Length: 171
Image (cartoon, rainbow, N blue to C red; front, side, top):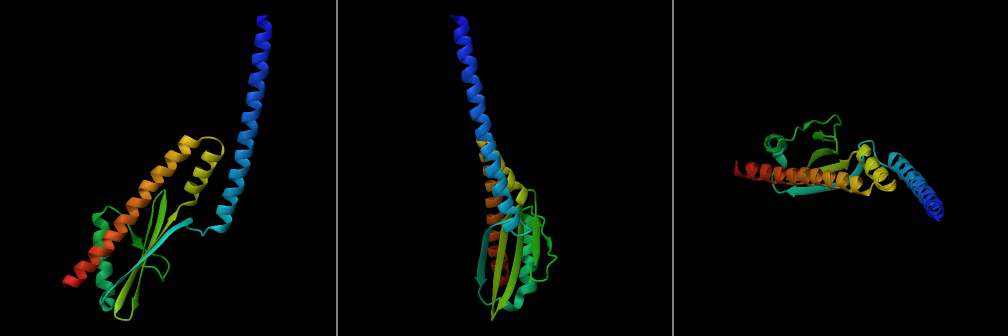
């Protein structure tokens, strides 16, 4: 009688393991396809998350001064921006999770201040793989950590730009 129960339990466990293996296999296949799409379709920097622009009135002739104040404001927030390698950009920032570019343009008498933030490709792929193979909790934790880093970076860039504008207007 007990052997019958043990045999039934073993058959059940074997079927359960087979089902889990199938689910993980499908998850890996889906994650692979999505990762390839991300690698082929996204720019080199990563997955574009946001592009934000502000138009600051009547400081178009003070672009250099604005950038100087902006660098100081960004440094106060413990972010290490460097001179961008591409000529159409002013500053760039990179960490494990995000990459950001800052650009400014003179529009008549006004100054356009903008930035673009990217999620780094390895982070996007890791989140997809973790959730696709059934490791939902680590995938969600990684996503939430990235979200905190992203929000912090975005708020720092918004407030640094606003403060630089106020400092220029006060001169």
